[in-house]
Length: 432
Image (cartoon, rainbow, N blue to C red):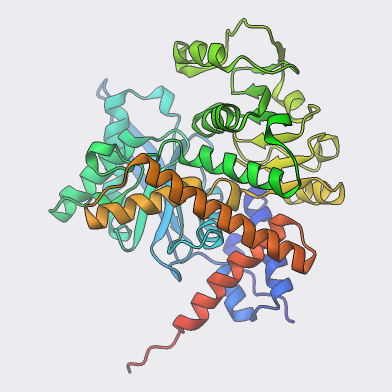
């Protein structure tokens, strides 16, 4: 088969984008995918780069760069979060949009992938400045948004308040209340029960499904979690409270704490609740304070990287002592790191399956907004469990049948679904 045509605009040294494209190419080759379809999937459909001027509280003008990328609408509207971070750039947003396409296809919900972001440190802005920036961004990218075109959600350093401002600005432009334009909103504005915990709960479900496939008892399982933000906090506490796992280490940007006998989560959560920035810094319980690098290579049964991308790489993958890696973050393992884990026989549940709980419940929220009929928390959790467990079973079956690792199996399933949609929809207009 001919090598798929590469889009020069996507060739980059950005490791997340390089990893994503390499995984795409591997799936294309295994599927012997038509090179034209592969070329479509290696490119993005729509990209916007915008300059965002706002007036600060002190009257000075500040400018920021913002991006929105839609990778594919073959299976439905673009879906993906908006992140505020000083390292946001167009290549990162491209990679995340591509991963969102596969994430939605991997769990078989009718969305394509999109992503957005602003290059900003939100900690340096006031609440009023953040609102002005969000509304300016919403106004600038409004032409490519819509409940049936492209639907934003929260991501790193954004939240339900961000989405409320976003939804209100777009509704004002459209002249009608449009709750379906965003997901991850406050419940009072059409948000869904269970959305805040959804990504973490999905990671927990994926971890337990793999443990059960391997005949392991969750109550006899040691877990290390990198990252104690929304995802890390929820997966940690759900695994401990609902499945009986022993959490032996957690970390955030301020600290990493470890106790091989198990952490006192109630005490830690009380500290975090009253800590500036909800950080672990200053926790004085019975723990060893270690580095994030040390945390990743602890002796444990399950490692859950739930912080940021590119944490398990060619430089440290040979030191990972966990038997199972469940990816809570987007792109925490590089292509080289993944190859090493695979060679060492370490099971890895990839991000596009493990952390899909957020987009699944976003899908539930979108459905509820369109119908103006809302579910209770038990219904949301039941449907989320069904989606994650069914998707895991499908990936496990493909992996067994084709003698693949889980990541390759999920990518194969997802790429095939997107390719089938592109093929069935066709490319040539029936008009003149």
